[in-house]
Image 1 (cartoon, one colour):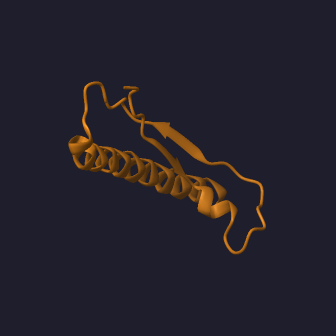
Image 2 (cartoon, one colour):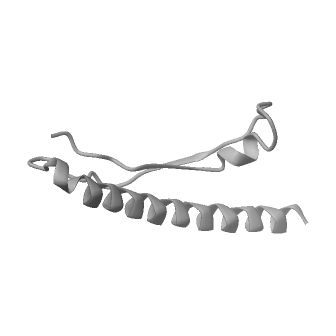
Image 3 (tube, one colour):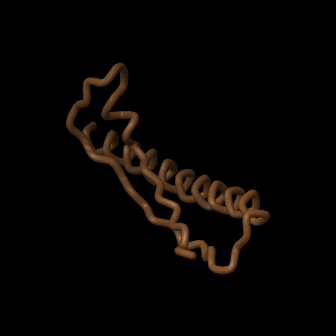
Length: 79
């Protein structure tokens, strides 16, 4: 089996606030630690999904906190 790598994206919503009209900007992308799948069986699918979602949520939460902190610092600099 091939390892499952959680990938999180933060800031994409800011680029497409309504509809499908995109505007320029940047997003942050982070890769989590590979989750081994070697020797897993179909009965392991639920625990694999839970592990991957837990890891993804943790990565995304940290990214969002860092993005909010950077946004606050940018606003202070603008003033």
